[in-house]
Image (cartoon, rainbow, N blue to C red; front, top):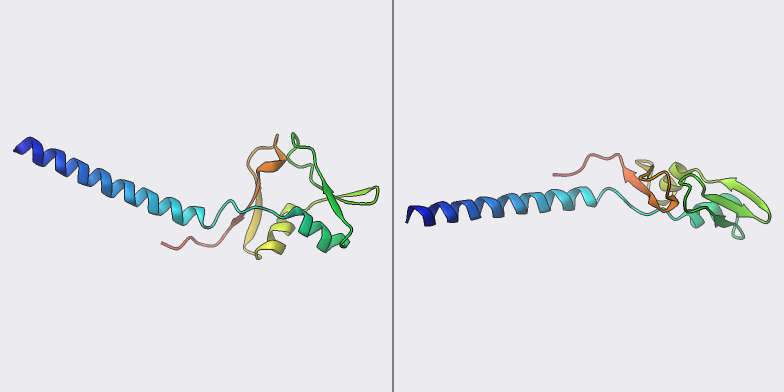
Amino acid sequence: MKGLTLALTATFFAAVLNLSWAQEKRNSDAYTGRSIDVLAYCRKAYGDSAGISHVRSLGNSWRCTLGKREYPVDMDAACKLQYDATFSARLANPADSYTWSCNSRKTHPR
């Protein structure tokens, strides 16, 4: 009987810890890692005929294109344009231009 009580207690605490972790993950995911619409930023900055280019293996390679001209993309400005002033850009892997994300500096609600 003592063994059964101990097993049930351990199972209960494991379930509570798992639920707590899952809630924390949902709270943090809601405020980080949002995508960046680089094309929308370029069109806002250079007009509707602007396009984009980049080299996948170079994190800082995103460019706005207008004809044969290229202009570097300010990823922080793109985040702020798409979301609000509390967001900033983050590059997770300098060797992969697809790892940019917008992250909020707001305090996460608990």
